[in-house]
Length: 291
Ligand SMILES: Cc1cc2nc3c(=O)[nH]c(=O)nc-3n(C[C@H](O)[C@H](O)[C@H](O)COP(=O)(O)OP(=O)(O)OC[C@H]3O[C@@H](n4cnc5c(N)ncnc54)[C@H](O)[C@@H]3O)c2cc1C
Image (cartoon, rainbow, N blue to C red; front, side, top):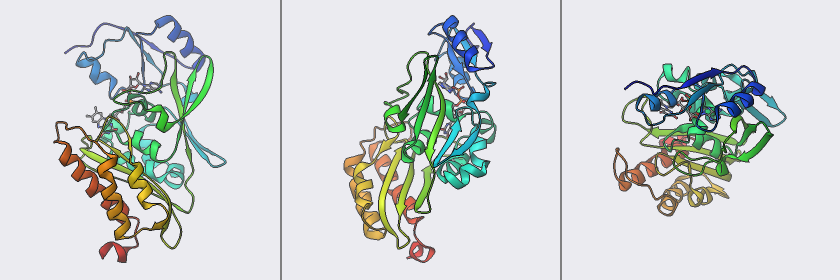
């Protein structure tokens, strides 16, 4: 199908953006990497009055560390997340997530801001930023506001973004030597959206004792699902087979997955349990993994 007729404006700065947004009105849409938006236009799932291309706004670009915060500009592409040394060292979860997103051509254009704004329940990055306890930086002509990632996502393809607002950046607490971060998922084919996935962040002592855990699942609900029971089941004890079994058992109360084109709720629950063991075992020493 052809795209609907619409306007197009490419802006060079945030000041330009606020002016063009005012002129274009609420029926216009922000265009970042275009990897989700352009498909919805082709299928006529969305018919904006115009597209406002933000890809040249330098204030939305760049990755930098300030104190114990890693700030990632909204226009950071998935491919950049996967190869940036600061991300690899300070937020390894995001570096591990990047190669799981779609295919190289899509990763070369798709942006972290676009992925978070879309809030696809099967997407990797919303679950990662929730697991990391990140903050979403939102900008509008009135200035900036910050919101915890877990409050930003409000359900299926739904966020706290208000008309006139955009995502400017994501601020991630930098990993410490106690941080353990990983992401695992099951897909039908490489590059597909996940049938189920898990972003896991632990804070562990050198002796393997878990101080705190955050297990966030994707593809098993209406958004990034924080498994509070499973996370609590790990805290304050050594990470061993018994702790992993306790986390798996707690998922029965944590997750209530709807069926989708991949399968029914029971399949999703099964995958979540399998992924839990896979993720947590990856934190064990090699000898314990083999046991
Ligand atoms: C074949 C295919 C497979 C894919 N597989 C995966 C996958 O496995 N995992 C995954 O996570 N994603 C997947 N994607 C989606 C991909 O990651 C997109 O890049 C991403 O979801 C959207 O980013 P974008 O920059 O392309 O945003 P766009 O498509 O430009 O925009 C998406 C939406 O976000 C809004 N938006 C964009 N940027 C901002 C901003 N800064 N502030 C406010 N609103 C904004 C737009 O207005 C639009 O509504 C896939 C896409 C395709 C085509």
